[in-house]
Image 1 (spheres, rainbow, N blue to C red):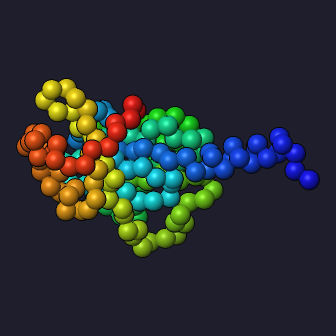
Image 2 (spheres, rainbow, N blue to C red):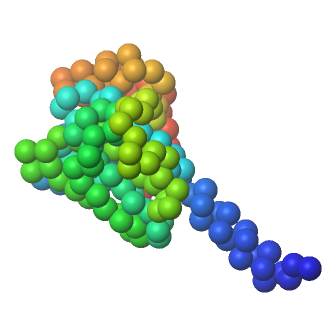
Image 3 (cartoon, helix red, strand yellow):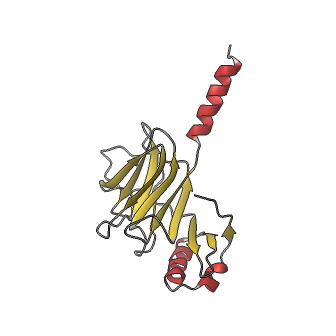
Amino acid sequence: MQTPLSLALLLLLAIRCTQAVHYCAFTSTVSCTGDAFCCDDNGGFCCGQWPVAWGWSVQWVSLPSSTEAQGYGDGTCSSNSAVQAFGPGTQCRPGGGVQRFGSINWVHLGSKKRNDNATLPQECTIPSSFQYTDDSGMQNVIQITSKTDMDVIGSHALARNWTALAGYPKLTPAVY
């Protein structure tokens, strides 16, 4: 027979295991600030394929306990990880202008999606959003629905074409 306390503990564990993490690739080489392509998932997915101007710093926001975040030099989460961070908490890893991260992920420890012997690349998902601050100082988050959209969004961001970026579906900005 299950007690109310054991049911509550099981519910808390289920919630913790399904917590989505927001993680991003930035243009800055020294900090996790500015424009970023971002992913939101429950762990175990490879996220990448952003334009070459991004990925110079990477950040994972509010990693749960017992999690590991990884940044890779390639775009498939299949090379040796170039950087690792562990939860709990928010972790920023700048590349310092030397290391660019082509893909990133995070996993619950003990449940890695690919084992250490895997040599085949993972199919990376594209980021789900792009966050930027326009010339009026307003933070914006827009939805990305395809690789083509991502490339065009990157071009508009580099050109500081706020009008074009404003035409994409907006997401409610979260405070990270």
